[in-house]
Image (cartoon, rainbow, N blue to C red; front, side):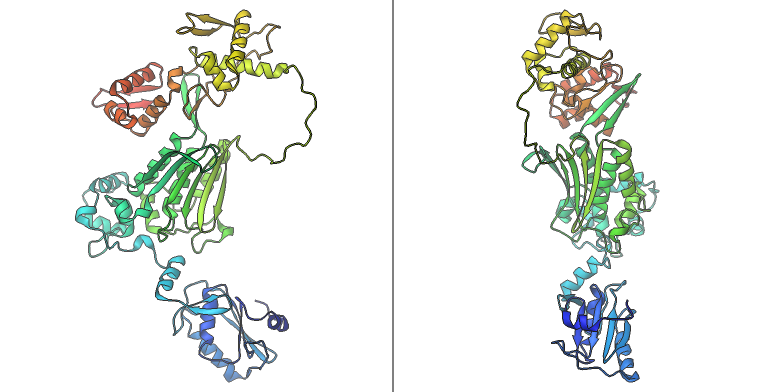
Amino acid sequence: MNDTINIPALLAAGEGYHIEFKENLDKSFIEEVCAFANSGGGKILLGVSDRGQTRGFPTDNRSRSLVQDALRSLQPNIAAKVSIQGKLCVIEVPEGPDKPYACSRGFFIRNGANSQKLTRNEIVEFFQKEGRIRFDELKHERFDFATDFDERAYDEFVKNARISSTIDHATLLKNLGCMTEDGSLTNAGVLFFARDIDFLLNHAAVVCVLYKGNQKLHILDKKDFKGNIVENINNAILFVQRHTNVEYVIEKVRRSEVPALPEVALRESIINAVCHRDYFDHRANVVVEVFDDRVQVTNPGGLPSGLKPADFGRRSVARNPLVASLLHRLNYIEKVGTGISRIRAAVAESGRCRVEFAYNDFFSVTFTRAGFEKVPNKVPNKVPNKVPNKVPNKVQGKTVSEILNCLSKNPEITANDIADALKISARAIRKHLNQLKADGIIKRIGSRKSGTWKILSTKVSESSPQVPNKVPNKVPNKVPNKGHHTFTTNSQPIPYKVHHKTAEIVIENLRADPQITAQKLAETLKITVRAVRKHLSQLKHDGIIERIGPNKGGHWKVL
């Protein structure tokens, strides 16, 4: 605080959020101090009337002692500075680092140019905001252990946290902070071990939405996940992965998968949203939204109390420390606060998207996919009067190379499918195919309906558009199937049947649950068991999956 205070400027400005005039030291003095400490701090000018007229204040030692005595009645104590400025006594009250502050008459905060006493509900809300009351540590009054406790969820937690199963339930739950002394579960216990989270804490559900395009107009898929906190995290991650691009890259024999969004970044953002959301806010859920150009994860509650914007990403302050501790036991989070750094590092390494963070009353993480960056709104005013009649060879060559890529990917592909993929007419595709056949580049084997294409050479005659000697590795983003995944190979093509959306979902389910049965897959995909077995057989034949062990006791492995 400044040693020299511009009193005339303060008097001219009048009373406000950070300035209070008091003619003398009365009982309301400490209320003003309390309000400033609980708000953004401020100055109290003793010896000035409400209208800004200077009356003067005694500056003897006794008067100063009375001011100091009044300040000491604030709980907890605060380091306010008292100075004499001419005929006035100025008290500079900093914003308190240990909120909330109280005086003998209660809790006060600054509301405009006035100090306002908090009601009982406002006090509770204030304590919640300042992190003095932890949602996850509070007892859940409606929880009934006999009917609401999920034994399966408890067993899974004990197993995955590597805790001895010989410890009785009550002892372990109390040690974890999930049970009170009277045998009720805390809110953290409900989040992890309740049978029906929607009934007990309906705002704890995680809502996932897939939109058509880049705006919130048409919903293609929507899921409200209402299981325990671990199930909700896993299901939300799987939802995004199911509806975003995965690039399958084959190098030599092994196939690797490269997601559009790095899995580490996606996982961290969803875990952070569920772990650090404001559970006192019943108005909103954690929401995961998937658009064509971006994925956004939003949770109620901005930065927790005690974490300044300048420290974001460098310091860790847990809004729900008990929830964070339980997730840490499951190796879902790190306690040292590396989540934001891990997201940034994963995005930078991937190079397939960019990430933005925003926080006010809500916290959001937005992943924008590569190729969807914002384009300037301005369009050139002048357009060339003449448009070339002939298309440059480079453009034609690119089309031919894309056609050859489609043929190498799927020898059974039709002209109409290629046209759909490349966004040009089927007539133009047939013209290119006829030219390539005439030049001895490709050959049609069998009939038009059931035959296949064979690439004989990558050398093109002078009559054909120029094509590189090697077929580019990169394939158009959209392939003839209607699924959300794209496939790229660096050597051997993946059979076209693998591109089918159902086959992709089969692969995802096998990865999520290697012991899943054909019957369970059929129920999940809403198709027949026979169709599932056909997909599994084709995937095994193509070297995409492998069955380890017998049919009943074995498991699937995605290669």
